[in-house]
Image (cartoon, rainbow, N blue to C red; front, top):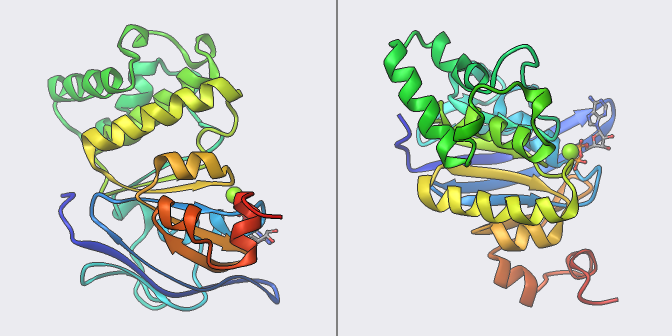
Length: 245
Ligand code: ADP
Ligand code: MG
């Protein structure tokens, strides 16, 4: 299910009214890669992610997985058929369901046998260190724990691609750093292709195989953390990363 070579976004454009908020976005992501979209608020990060998820229509360009067209303005694979997992800043857990039932929800829709569901849910919760909390409800958990449930609910579905939109930005500073390491460890273990959105430079540098720096809907630079850090390609990148004034 997860096997593919690359996710390819070509010439992606998006307008809101007359305003072009994504301008000719091109990016190819290899299977297993962790790529971060980094930029200030309003630079178009969430819009790009939502286009990749299929949650909003595109106004030009195309999105492919190998030779499977997900969207080119004519052909369109709906979000629920892409097998992409999403985690947002506001981890929308079901408040009336236990941790177990929150994580099991999608598997039940797939009508898997009860025993299989149990095994997968426990294994996913173990990966995010929440196995002792299976019977709790979201309100009984801290912000960090709730966000871990949201991650477990995503990975349990074995998505082809994980799309994470500022998943740590509601957490306090210390927890953000701790979760950064957990995310990194999780990715090293599962190798799920990940597109991560953040405005936090340190987070991007710590987590990513490659970083895409965005400003006003335009790609400023694509590179490894080392390349971006050592060789910012223009003044915007240098200033945004805070290495020069
Ligand atoms: P980021 O995630 O980098 O903060 P967004 O992708 O949310 O940026 O927004 C990019 C630009 O598009 C911003 O100027 C924002 O105001 C605009 N925008 C986003 N969503 C909408 C919308 N639904 N309607 C109109 N404008 C929008
Ligand atoms: Mg955003």
